[in-house]
Image (cartoon, rainbow, N blue to C red; front, side, top):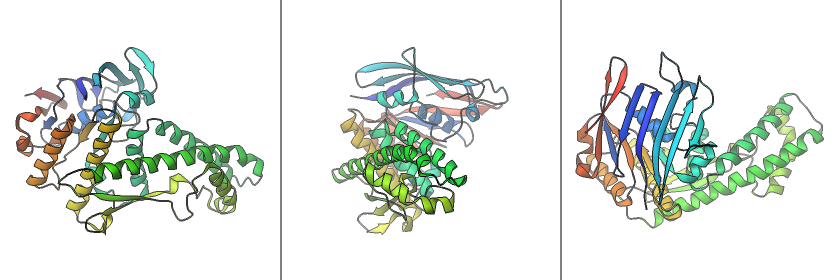
Length: 366
């Protein structure tokens, strides 16, 4: 079974006034000069999943300037044995709306009919920057396995914001905290369990694969004050931490303090100490492992969005990546500045050129 986007129409989205694409289930190689609007197409595809897309932009930021009329994306999604018509849009900067098969739907419903993974250049520094980016990376992988992870995370963050408001106001009455900490404990324990399940899925997918990319051993680091795992333990830990939290003005314990620690398995070297090329190869390996695990669990490989994927990969590794994508049967949307970067794909892929003309991105299918 397959998962693919067979058509995409973008209206007033980023640099594209109107873009229409008709594609099959093969990989899609998008080429053109920097700034032409290639990544904008990948971002559009990323919005066929829950959340803010691969750039994490607001709906207002995605609208084409100077018109600022709002934007709309529509497409036909072939998922397993079903075909879905999907629309998502924003008017005048308002929160984006979703329709599936003509009916209004929550964003989380997108996660039930499709899986979308991406690798973008900003993630190249994942291992050497702050823990927030690694948590986001882990949560995107977790969301691919457990679509409800997004809602649980939103509920946790809402309760934490309310608790932090009490802490900043120096409220000391325990009764004000009890209900919030119970909600944080329930959702926090679920977030932790979901993340651990995702790491187990990734480890199994890496262990059972023959691949040209190095495996990464991943562990979830709980943060300096630890991360209790059961609902009762999390609730007790939050209550015990109130004194420290009052002094800090924020919550110092919970899944929002966790970190993802990676090790280049065969070399036993922390990912943060690896070369730039090795770090990129580890990221590619994790995305491929995530895709293999989803192919097994969801029933089809996910849509892969690989922006400037050739960066830091030599010709042999590029060819190996394309071979793995094709063997997996994934519709991978990839960008590059020239067609030569995709030579080893040959007719296994379809090609789209993007040009900029008078401030508008033009799409030409080959």
